[in-house]
Length: 457
Image 1 (cartoon, rainbow, N blue to C red):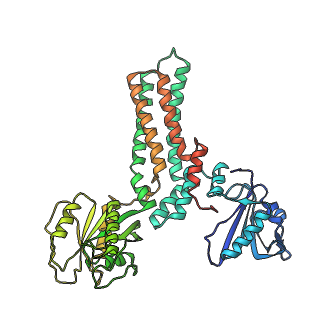
Image 2: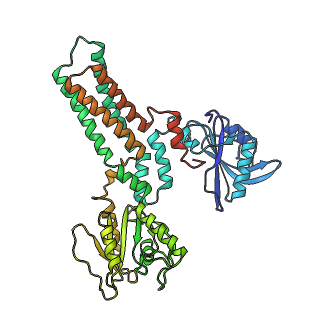
């Protein structure tokens, strides 16, 4: 990747639609679009002659023929997403039209953008820090309002502000330590040592607080996998449809209708939950059903939450009891379905066993089940301030390394060890914290982060 190149890419989803947007960014973006854009009307201008943040109507030509009529927006540096000269071309939606416009821009001197290259340039040019850049992808991929709120808070810099303050606190302690290294004849005064230890303990406590948000951050970004298991005809597919609010799975009175796993994501009390409908647990009647049951067992093994569906109108048998025992150590909710029918599958109270009665026909208990799912996977209330600082796996790794280094620093200071050794661990802590916002980084790290972005972002 050469940051001096002018790049172009389609920024809207491929397919039919009202509009498609092609973005061009780089020092030669105005000249590139000049070569293929024909302004139409008395106020329209070539990009190189246009003022920043103005829109111009005209035509894009490619190989001597019309590619499309477009609206062209000029955004001059540094007032653009990438902080570079940028042109955004809005053309008619449709795969062919957008591709023809892109081909015209590439023929005029741009090169295809790599995945995430626009956002990478925004980071390299100081428009965003690394945590904010990651939040751009989280905003795009958010599947619930809570996930979107958390991503928008990170994009706005809520997490970055706290991380920068943490790094500044560690740097101030490091400055005191290195000052005493430069003047070895002067010992650290007892009150100064206690002040430094106090700052380090505060930093350690703050990192612990952030690390506790890792699970919630993962849940908001990726969701939780919940497997619906049970005997055939217990109502698993009906329950899937009820939780989704639409008919996704085929439901019939014939046992064994579901032969394969079906996965769909539902927003349950603001949390993304990947619901996995599985084949009924019974002896397979043929090779197809045998494969379906094998996939169901694999989905169960990978699930983070089990919804064990029982037919509340039928007595439990040895298979139900066996699965109750097998799942005793798993996060689970027992769903007594078909509560609209006379019940015969009562459950004795058991410590830690959560039971919800539902009827997919009348929808009784469905909202209670949603509450139970949220309470099982997310302990406590979902507070607004919690959404401001939910960290991801990369942040978690960096904070863990920083915390370990601070812990070593604390121990060394308390034992009165050489300040040179103390400084080594403090430097490691500062570097690890700096990785989160990109104060300290490598090309390999940036490649890893931005390769996960879509092309055009």
